[in-house]
Length: 297
View 1 (cartoon, rainbow, N blue to C red):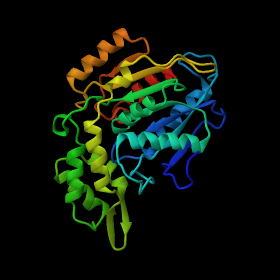
View 2 (view 1 turned 180 degrees about the horizontal axis):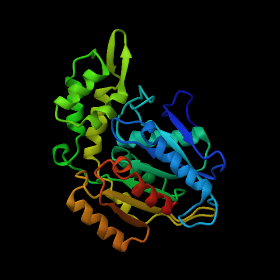
View 3 (view 1 turned 60 degrees about the vertical axis):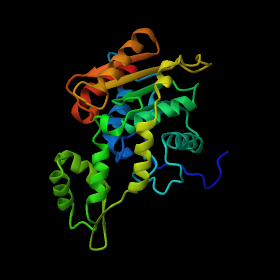
View 4 (view 1 turned 45 degrees about the vertical axis):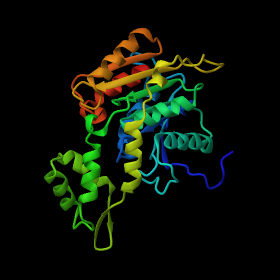
C-alpha cells in the first residue's frame, strides 16, 4: 500500500472508444519530453486494436491494449519528485502508478531515456509483463561524450540561455544558433511557458542532469539477456522487441551486434531495424514503427 503522499507521475490514458482495453501498456518518452509526444502514435495503435489485431486479422483484437502515457519524473506535469533522481527511482514511480491506477498493466514501451526506464521496470516485474518494446536505446553504460546522444549538449544549452526569454521564437533562434535543428528547438519549446513579461524553461535542469548522469552510468543488458519467468495462468509468455533506427547514432555498432547475437539465441527477443529512421523513430518512420508494434501486440 502506497503512502498517501508517495510520488506518482502524471499520466493520460489512451484507448479506442469502441474497444475496452483488456490490458494496458506504459508508454515512456525520452529525456526532455513528455507523454504527450506519443499521444498521436498511441491513438493510432488503440484504433488498430479496435478494428483488427495483427495485420490481416479478421476483426478486433481478442484482448485489446490501452496505453498509459506517462510524464516521467521531472518531465511534463510530473514536477518536484523526491530524490534520488535515478533510472531506478523512475521505474519505482511506475510501480506506484500501476498500484494507484488498479489497471492490468501487461506491457511497457520506452524510447531512448524511457527505454532504460522500461528495462529497469521489467527488472522489477519479472512476471506479469507480456510485451516490452525497447526503442533505440543502448543498454550499455557509456561516457556521455561517447554516446552519440545530443542530450548532454542540449542540457548545456538550456543552462546557458538567459531567462526570461523574450519570446518562443527567440528561444528557437537560440537553439538553432547553438547548432541544433529547428525540429529539436520546437520539441524543446514544449517546455517553455509564459511567466510574467517573458518566457521561462519549465524544467528542473539539476534534476535532469542527475537523471542523465545515471542513464549513462547504468548497464541493463542483463534484463534482456536473462530468460523471462515462465508464463503464469492467464498471462502470455513475455516477448521483448528492440527497434533501432538504421541511421541512429544513439546505439553503438558494438551494441547493435550484441542485440543481433542475442536475438539469434534468445527466443524471447526480436530485433527490428527501420532503415530510414534516425533516433526519432516515431517521427522519422511512424508507419514502419507502427507496423512493427502492431504486428507484435
